[in-house]
Length: 456
Image 1 (cartoon, rainbow, N blue to C red):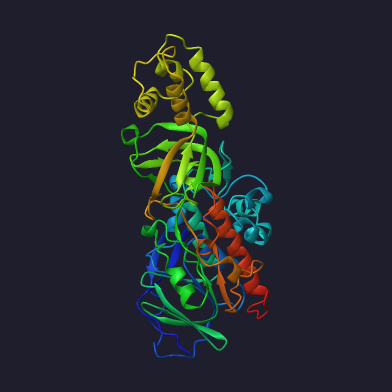
Image 2: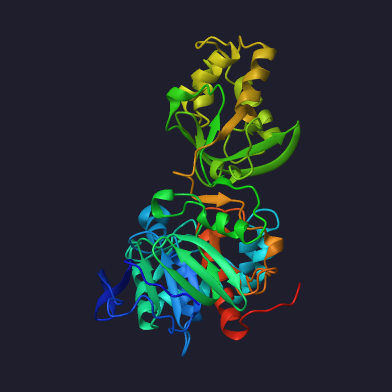
């Protein structure tokens, strides 16, 4: 058994009136002999100090349970701090049955046991009981009442410290995990540890500046776990030969987006979008469909708010017919469509800017209406991990026991949070709820059952 201590730092927390205020470094191991192998192995090593990792550590703590959290960044919880534009969009309103539909494909079905075990109400109660009340906005997103996201990771750190959990940050990028007999040997850049259980809580690959760089996928693959194709999710969609480059900032509310591949419709969503310099963005429209797009797909967008394509065509035809000698762009602008956008559509349709409704040919009218209700874009891809809110793909769901989060073929290894293939989740706090719920379920299994060799 190896247990070698390097120069990495353990973080403690100063508190005042039971509220965390700052993190300070202190080396608690200077009095230990690096050659001393008599120290027993950890009960569990959790790789990743994000929300899933810290929460799992809190829930798995207990008497005679030695738990170590390894975080490669200088501090924990960086990604949690930036969610919801820095305000910490923790979760969403609604029942867990509502939540299941927000994880794409079979992701929600896989997450059901975790979500039912630890609900959004449980998550809100956890932070409320520790001095951080939340309130929902008009879109159902829960934010701290103080509208500041840093309090949540600090509170998680404080809970870990109170439970006696070791947290080692900086220089602790894990390189290998090796199952040996009934223990795991975990080697980081600076040290080697042993543990009875290991938790992969490394996050995805989005926002790499926070430490999420896809390390967990590599570690899982080396352990023989299947990893599905990964890519940016909840990201702006990039368009080939984009015709609206100079119309950046124009937005449309509640419009339909349909995705086609090989001339077959594969997905449709409705939501808000905004034109960018090289494509379309904005939740919940473009960002939600971005998890499904691939280069070469055709993305059709309707620019008429709150109506289906058929009724929109009829309404626009009636508006133009009633416009008589007035200019087309003026008449259509009165329906709420930005006039700069209308002028561009006229140009793309080959219609003069000053064309009147009465002099618009049937062919030109139909072309213009088609562009307004079903404009075809060719997908170039999505913006990269640097700006993507989540990662699609990850450790394959069928390799994980959905009632425990334990790897079927590697007893004692648990995978939680965004390292799993749960399709990123929609915007609105769903991804964080999944992180906390899978962490709670894994911790429950770790405490009650330890390793299991049953096949499911």
